[in-house]
Image (cartoon, rainbow, N blue to C red; front, side, top):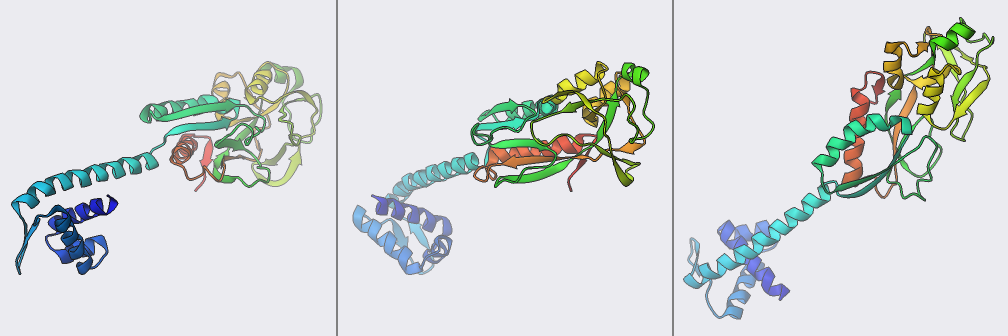
Length: 304
C-alpha cells in the first residue's frame, strides 16, 4: 500500500514538473527511478497513464481521471503537513510560570492580550517572591530578579531594574532625612527576606566612587515585595524598592526618596527555563513578551 501511495505521489510530481527529469530533480532521485515508479503504477492498474512523445508528456483519458484523485491525496497530505508545522510553531499547551508577586500587575497587562491571541495556550501562574521549587512545581519558566543561584537551567537576562531607597513623609518627619549612608541615627529598614542571603544594601554617591553599606537594623521584614512597600508607606522604615513599583507613590507623595544623591545597584531581570522547554514556542513567545515589558518600562534598562 505504501509503495502504491508513493507511486501516486510521483505521478503528481511528474505532471507538475512536466518531465521525468524535472520530477527526479524535485524528488531528489534519478530519472530512471521516476520512470520505474510510473511503469510499476501503470502495470498495477493495467492502463497507460501517460502518453509519451520525444518532446512532451501528456495524460491519457484514464490517466487524467486517476491523476485527479492522486492530486487530491497529495494536497491532503500537504495540508496535514502544514497543519503540523503550524502547531509546532504556535504556542500551545499549558505553560507553568512563576514570578514575584509584586510583578504580577505588570505581567498581567502583557499576558492577557497574548492569551487572547493564542486560544490554545494555557497558563498557570505561581506568584511568590521566594524561590520556588521549580522542578517540584513543574515550572517551565521563572522570572527572577537579582543574583541567580547556580543551576543547570537556561537563563536569559532581560534587563535591569532601577532601585531606590524610599520612606514615607511621616517616617521622615519622625526620624529625619539622613544626609549620609554612614549615618546610623534612629533609622530602620523594612526589608525583603526570601529566606536566602540577607538583603545587604550598598550605595554610591551619584553612582560613582566607594560603596557605603547601610547598617540600619531591620525592624520589619517579609517575603512579599508589595507588603514591604505597604509597610514602608505606613511609616515603619526605609525600604529598597523597584522604581517602577513606586513610581505612582513618589508622584503622589505617599513615598519620598531617601538619600536621593546616592544610587543603589540595579537589579538584574532574568527569564529562567528548564533546558527541555527553552526552545518550545510557548516559552519563546512569553520570553519575547517579557523582554518587551522590560523595554517599554521607563525605569528598566533593556539588555542589548
